[in-house]
Length: 393
Image: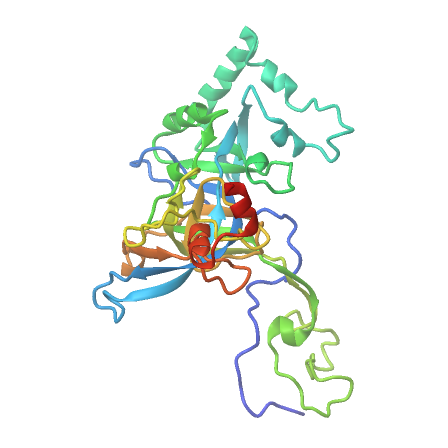
């Protein structure tokens, strides 16, 4: 009977099985932060699109660290986050089998972007979604039933969530259907939550109302897809010797004779990428506002420049709305929809509590070896183009 001469840790984690294509394109929040009634009412999640990456220069402020008072260059990700619209309120009651939705109240007016999500074919449908729920707000009987629903939520529910959707018209992508998600309201008593949710209906919710600079957030999304991959690429198993018959990027033994089946833990070829993942503790370096032409300026770099690099973000384009700058990388390709959630943890580490002092944000072109930070800088060095001279004449 054969046995292995040396023991070794296994290749790849079994914690992420099954490694198959995700059923949904949008990152799903599977657990919201723990509620604290002593805090004021606030939302706990948001959605945005990944635009691209750049790098920044900052001075580390972490006493005791070798980097303290030194400058470091770090990679950052830009996520475009236009305001979301609140279109409904959902109340949940606790049961022995978990939460159950108790009452749902929709807003009077729901945009076509949101209604598109309820249909497979928008052009052939009758576009009648939520007409009756909107009519409820118009007559007295409907208003009375809505008030009853809100009062029952305040009386019986333990969890209140707001139905919010993105606004694709602000992203300038090909997408026309809005992405809808439930966002939990934390803080305050249930009656306060219901009033807070009611005050949000049909109003835009900016990202600055949820997150602040230096805060730690979690990013939930679907990773970049790589299709069908072999066992060496997918699991990182060792390649077999050069002279191996019928290929060497394989697993030599996939199990014993008996039991006469392949165990689930044996690495096999299959789908790699496009998996649902959650990355925790991403620090917010900056929150940018729409129309700010100095969103990439700092106290040390006073150049008038916006966050969009020269030539636009690679395969994304311009940033025209609010944005978040997060430390490091996040899952997915550019244009991928990401869900941002408030952290589940109470942070005590110095790296998490450190105040970020940005000195420089790079806006050089990402299409090649970018030499210039702004168009004006390029023209000052290279001279005017023929079309620029003609325009001046």
